[in-house]
Length: 107
Length: 107
DNA sequence: TTCGAATTTCAGTTGCTTCTTACGTAAGCA
DNA sequence: TGCTTACGTAAGAAGCAACTGAAATTCGAA
Picture 1: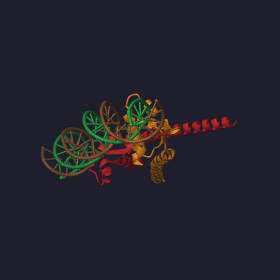
Picture 2: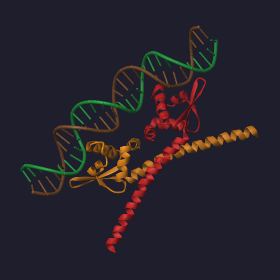
Picture 3: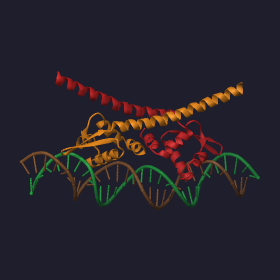
Picture 4: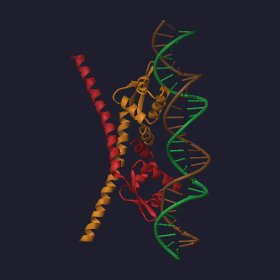
């Protein structure tokens, strides 16, 4: 989970995921979207995403087609949601406790 | 936003945020929760979180009290939500397009 | 088999992250 | 004033991350 979080912390990798979310795309096409780095760099980003299990690779002849692993993306979002809602729950509990205290003082 | 994402990509920093989410806590107490690193390391994590605007600092005499910047946390979550829902939207559009194509073929 | 295209992998550089130890500083107390 | 507590900051080690350019791999085509 930590690997995935680190993977999406990079804007280039988020952009790659965006490209391959709704349809698969060959590595070259992905690389063409980035004018400031080499293909090699993109290939390495793809490798990071693959290790984080955030993309799937399919070979078709000469090419390698990538697409986002939506299941894993959803799992990551669930993890984040739980993290946030856990925090908000504690905040709520703390607010209620403070309220209780106040009422006790004034009652 | 990127700074914030990188900040929460670290499990120790997520744990710190969890500690100070619902109530403020002095640096020493925060550090005491971590038995495997020095106080200095925690201080540096706090500095990373502060630069990401994810925590607020308040000085009280000798001490420095930290608490999560909930507004910023919410903003970060919103950003992530938009990222995900953007992806799911594209996925939906792509699925509909594929469906349309299929119907055209068969019609 | 030989060539070219698509793509990864390797080697090397540069810069960032995380950590430790040591030091600096400000507030509070004797 | 001098000591202690609660911190941050500096300096340096070790490891990791992001790149580039060159070499290797793998497939399709001639």
